[in-house]
View 1 (tube, one colour):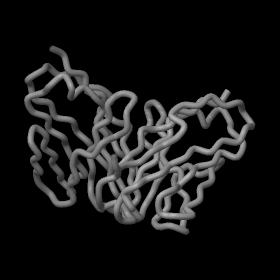
View 2 (cartoon, chains in turn green, cyan):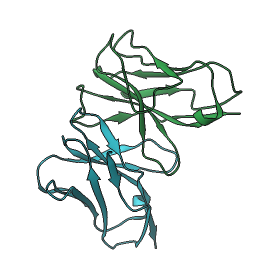
View 3 (cartoon, chains in turn orange, cyan):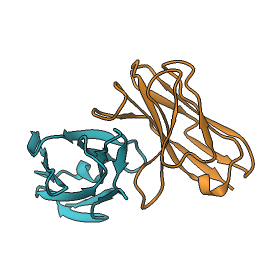
Length: 114
Length: 109
């Protein structure tokens, strides 16, 4: 089934540990995004990539890094996790860079930092 | 600053009609989106408006007034499966999406 796959679906992590959330899409979409979703707040963009080999910072990039070595994969790394990074993380993709069309979302990764 | 406002929660009755409003203030405008998100699941696309007027898609319709910075999502013939959060998002001048916090819609039998 075509779409976006995220892993892990859920993780509990000790503060200070390094964590990578994986995201893979098989739709050959150019643009990919990482959002976090917190109760009472809208989705907030962490980082994005308009095409393989390029990345950009979103609204809340501090403490996170990304890479886009190829079209399909867009991992998000927390170098040293802190409790404020407890959230649900969604990876998304779109056919074109710049949002004028539908975003396709992964099922989310629920991260708890203790 | 950029802002998207929508009600936090609404309640409606199965079979009825409900209108979910969204107002926005953004730097530029390149379209407005509505997404549906069931609890514990990913958001899924419902509609996209870039010109003023009403877009109808089955039981769901979305309206846009750019001059008023206003949109609404209209859901007809409500079903229990429509219980979900409805997210309003605007694509700004940089083609970045600004998201509202979402409206939780509760459907009662």
